[in-house]
Image (cartoon, rainbow, N blue to C red):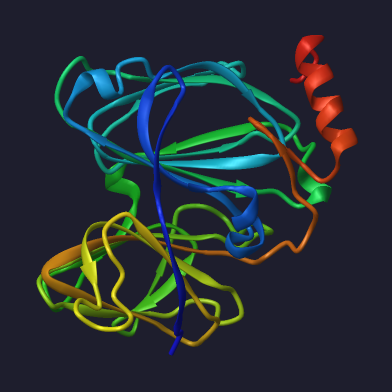
Length: 280
C-alpha cells in the first residue's frame, strides 16, 4: 500500500487578469511533484472572481492539462485551434517550442470550476512542435464504483475493482495518470497504477481519512510513496479527489513565468524569442 508522506496546503492567489485560484506550486516543490509543476483550481460562482480570464500569453517547455467540472472555457491559440470546453471536458496542450494562447470564460454568471495542471517535458522534448487536443466528456473513460462513487480517467492506465481502464491519450514519456475520483460518504477505493511512480492527490471536496493521523483536508495535496496500490477513504460527507501520477524526470528545472526549461541560458533564449516574435 502507498503510504502518506506529507500534505501541502494550496495557496489562494490571482493569475491572468485577476482570476482567483487555489495553487499548488513553487520551486521548493519541483522535486516533490516531479514531473508535475503546478496544480491550479478555479472554483467560484462570483463572476468577478474569473471574468477577466487569461488573455493571450506564451508558454514553452511543458504541457498543460485543463479539466472542467462546471462552466465553460474558451480556448484560442496561434495554431488556429479554437473551441469551448464544458463540464466534464478536458484539453491537453503541448507548449513544446512555443505556443501563444488565451483561455477566457464563456459565461457572465454562474459557477466556474476547473483545474489546470502543468506537466513538465524532458529536455529532449522541450522544443518539440506545439500541439493541442480536446476531449468531450462523453469520450472520457469512466467507471461507476460498486459503492456508488465514480472514477474518470483523463490520462493513463489504472486498475479499479479488477477492471483496467485506459485514458484517451497515447503513452507519453512522463507516463502521466490523471484521475477524477468521486466518493460517497465513507466510501473507499483502491487505485492500481505503476508502482514505481509517485502519486499525488488533491482534495477538492470533502476529506480523506477523516479523524485519523493521515487525514487529508480540503485544498490540500497529499504526497504518497511508491507502492502497488493507492487507497482513498472518504470522510463522512464523501470526497472528490484529483489523482496524479507520473514518471519523475530528475532533470534541472529553471522556470521564469510561462517558460520552463533546464538552464538559465534556455530561459533567456525563450524570453528573447518571445520578444522577437520567434517563440513559435
